[in-house]
Length: 192
Image 1: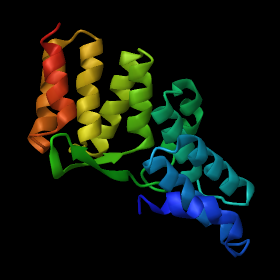
Image 2 (image 1 turned 180 degrees about the horizontal axis):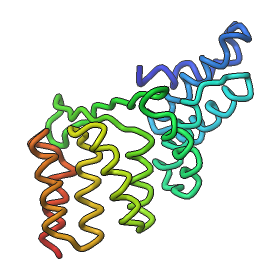
Image 3 (image 1 turned 120 degrees about the vertical axis):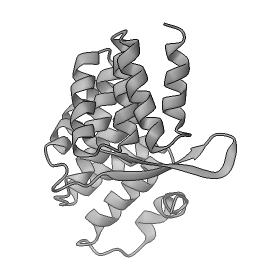
């Protein structure tokens, strides 16, 4: 799957894809390019999918996720807010297997939502209180969300609440005792 955009995207114009299938193909290529780090192309494909008639709200979420990965946090906000309003009924979490550094065949299973990514956007923008609320809402929906639990830990770190941060990093480690974000967060707390 991860190599598909690299092979398909350059020859897309040569493929005989019917007009009614093009919105779905472009959306799939958007996500494929997102996952391999071709962020500019990902946004282009999501936008082309919408222009081709797609009504899939996942395109907007894809644009929001992509802007976040590009570090364009303010640009991500309207897309993530719109997508968050549709979760979890219309839009389900995006699963991702993140490689464990130093262990070539080991992965952490993490689910991302527009709400958790919006929490990270606010964290990166220094809005610790808003980030905390967004992460807490995600944890209330899924108490095993590694992304939101570690996000709460980092929001508490930003608020200089060492005890609160420790609590959430440890909660994440109860879900997965090797989760790197939580381990890193605990190390960062030693600097406070």
